[in-house]
Image (cartoon, rainbow, N blue to C red; front, side, top):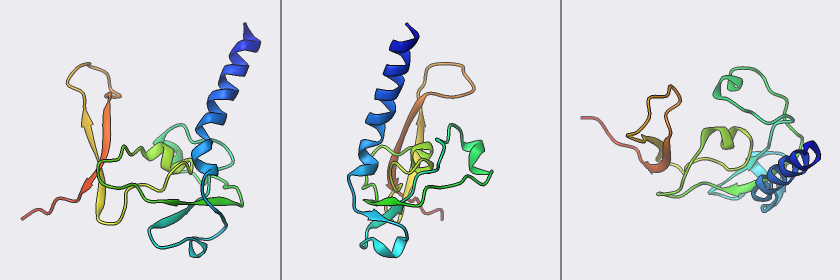
Length: 119
């Protein structure tokens, strides 16, 4: 049973890394085109936003990836893990909580949308 669990976790992690491998390799932001970023994953996966406070060592090589367009699902933890670049310029990752549940960690969705100007 433990062997099956280890295999399942390994396959899940490998599948999550497919996005990171799809772009050109880079070491610096300047090596990527306009509308792209150099997404360099940390050595160890980030599991919470709290780890963003601590200095996390990064790998030496990342991949050029395009910024997320309007309407795309965005996730700050995936961005910290170098799986995507985040929302494009002038966009913001808005959180929409589900109406159900009383948990502290609210389930919901995050979507790239235009920044709203306050008057």
